[in-house]
Image 1: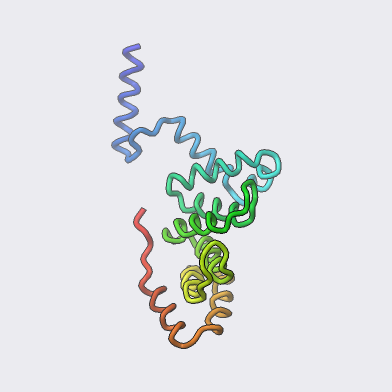
Image 2: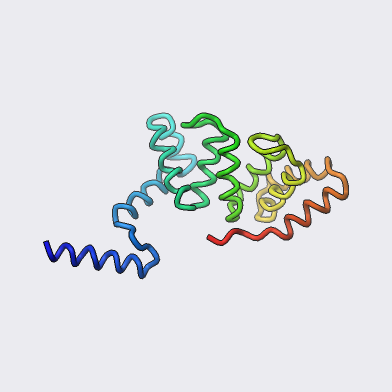
Length: 173
């Protein structure tokens, strides 16, 4: 028994040195499985049909750890109402967390929510900001969406959107 205690202590210390204090191998294995299960299109599409609680749980676990991919995918599940009740405000919350970390899909999707006023107040300037951030990372859909929005704004609003996008800094994870 003493040998096991020493082994556990060694693992905890090693985890702390690696920046993973308190994470057991089971937690690491669970996170790896969650990462695999929260992958679009597969196995997520199949899981949503056969085991929606597992699909949502995998993405939620990653999201709650601050993983921007997990946050973005959980946002999508809420936006589309897949495996959860459709909730645009929850989608916006998860997209914001992921978008603040530079997740391009979340930035584009958050731009869409602001454009339509779904889960957030309708704000075309803020929509243009999020679309611009995603477009700057090479997302062609975001670039098209941004261009459509910019045509609807006054020159002052365009300048404000450009100023906000230029000033944006990713959140420190």
